[in-house]
Length: 498
Image (cartoon, rainbow, N blue to C red; front, side):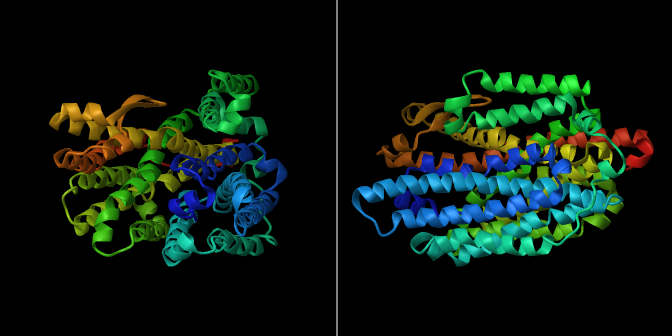
């Protein structure tokens, strides 16, 4: 859970950009740790990884409490020094928390795939019902503690992470973890690396180094203009020398799919919630109920994934999901002038579409690449998370700004020149509305044009986002017909293939 931006800004005396960096510090270590842990987790054991994650939560809570103490009860120069110290504590505490979260993902996916080796897609869907389930619980806590987050003791808010962490520790501390399916079948470490191969390693570490390159504290020491590509090339060459393998072709194909998938599922969530914020407030409701509603749908559906997978197959389920996601995003793009009911109806359709994407892709990875063990399974998750952070979120923002500025330009070319600024991101340049320049507009007509264009730009851009699940649908159909030509979809038996 995060504190509200206003509270962070006031307590730490930081701007919105710095607040964004603080929030991001809890996200990028999550994705990176998933991949890196997968390289060693079979060697060190799942229990050690579990204990490391719990220790991460404990350290984060302690650093958050220290940050609160650093800025309360002091004034003057001591407060200025305390604010700097508090920011550093929260920043690096968030990094540690992200590493802990990624560690949980790194061991729980292969554990479930090993325990339920004959029905992986079903049980990975059930496991990942915990993600939206956590959003439901977190959303309810956020709503109930809204006043505390704004004006009260925010140690209560940040300290909530300890509650599930302690439960999780007592649940697993005495558990006997199974030996990984790959190791039990006698598949060697190098054979595991071969499944990912040069292609998978190149994509994964290109994203890792691109993400690290965006962290100012690391960029200043380890990265120059071309360092990320040099590091990526070195890793790919090492993988090539060790494995002499491009990687499993089907896995490489799925890695390509995973990047737009992550953007479709995770990238649009915050955007859709933002679109519903004003209608929800107009109806006198907390906007957080939107996230709780869509997350509850996902949680329930994932629990009942077994019969659906049995009826349609894993590939068939992904085909249906892509069609529903396309319909949902397209429907949302036409709700700009609609009421709350129409927006909720379209969002419900979209929620049904995106529900099975992530865990079913993991299930297919585990079923088709069992020799890859924890590495291929978790690399898929890590690549998805990194892709949405590095490519997806900036693309969505750039698409929204581009759509908005074009709508303004169509009505008032002079105005768009007055209020926009040139920006760029990984995929290229774009024009964006500068908030400060827009706030300086004095004409009521021009203000109305900006507001209307921004609103329509948001909804119109959602329709363009349907291109991602459309691409995914084409890929899933190709996979469907590929497996059909081989007698239908069947999981690979690791013991028969080794």
